[in-house]
Image 1 (spheres, chains in turn purple, green):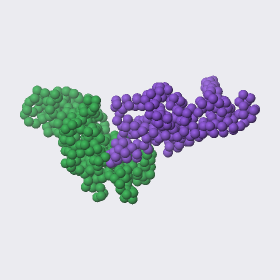
Image 2 (cartoon, helix red, strand yellow):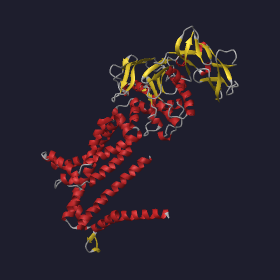
Image 3 (cartoon, helix red, strand yellow):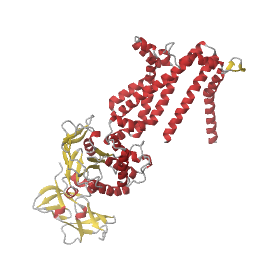
Image 4 (cartoon, chains in turn cyan, brown):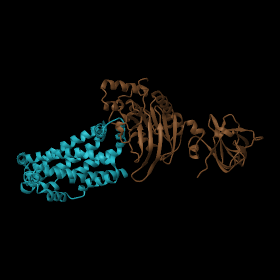
Length: 261
Length: 353
């Protein structure tokens, strides 16, 4: 009886997930390859919408990846040493700094974007370049990198490892390179996964910060939803999936392999 | 072995105290000299400041202003640990999980720029010395506690440090292994002949390994001396009770005799005190027939330990008196026994303040 209830519960959960996650995604994808969505799939299957989207938005999609990996690079270069310093130093000031880094999670992206605009709209060439969006993305994703790396530091007693390496004569830089980073790899991978996916999908901030010449994938998506046929927008979603799913799977596999090693 | 011997620096700690940022006073100002090649044990209960002192010597903590750390007469106070040439074994070993056993041992040599071939030879030498042959390519998490301890020691010794610092290196191990490794460690330290500072809370470890022992209490040095000094002539009640088993007896002294409920026990000399505190080690008390001896008592309990038996005697002193008797003595609970104590085995301690 109890097993049956559990089974029914699990089945219901699965169905709910399917209804709200899988089915809409599938419908959206199928719409992207349908000749006329209002007449249904019977109107025929086509790739014309996909091609149209690619022609229109290839630059946008490319820019999205450039920004995502640039964000990753910045969060790695700045975030991992910060996490190390915050963990080793400890104390009140470190906690305050950690809180400040985490703050953008609690503030609406629009507000962050507004603050950036107010401060830097005078710097024309910076305002107009994709680096402006990069700045926003770094602010938004940094806590994910710092926190996931710090979580790993807390479990491997990195302070003692650091002291151990120091006692053997290693300079702070060598300690960081030889001991700290290799032992933080699971956290760095988890953080990297978050940063890339968040950056690729970020809309709030980006919508405020973009210019007609610096659009990212989600902005293009909104653009196509607003101004073009439903099929085109759906084809856009399809491209988004095709781009991001292999990336997610690859990173996940990499993380699994690293953990098993 | 000869390649390893003859290393070591002398250490001087000069008025080193430590107050942490939150105002906790971990170490009172202390001055201590450690001779080249000596093994000095810092012994005390947790929170006595022994690890803080070790970390000051290592360069992991700065002493309070005014304190100095000197190696071979050179002021090292502001030199960071990575330039002090010390080998350190941590309580948790701090082995690098991302490196094999051999890479762990060779890491300090790699930092020093030793060529790979020479490094491999040195690692092999240490692997043999610390009895971990066959484990070179293992990952650290595939080792047992005892093996980790050996790797940590090999890694610390590999760099031919001037001073070897060990922070409770055996505490994480189970009792049987601890005893075996203690003997091994002792032989190794003697063979290396390197200046060693060893922190422990275990008095048996301190006795076996130390040329001298520094007993610490509440952030201050309670006594410094050879294991014999500390055991036979403890300076105060804390040291007497911390090292080995001790009966602490409080009683008046009249003309060189302790006045006890079970009789008058001579302690030598002719002094009188209204209230004296003395220490009597359990093994210095001989069990004899009750008749014709100055002190007697009634056996309250008998614990047969194997190599000896431990009797608890009531009625002799104010409190219970612990007596270590040979395992051949027939002792029954309730028997009245005579207690023979040589006057020189009784150590007068300063009165408690």
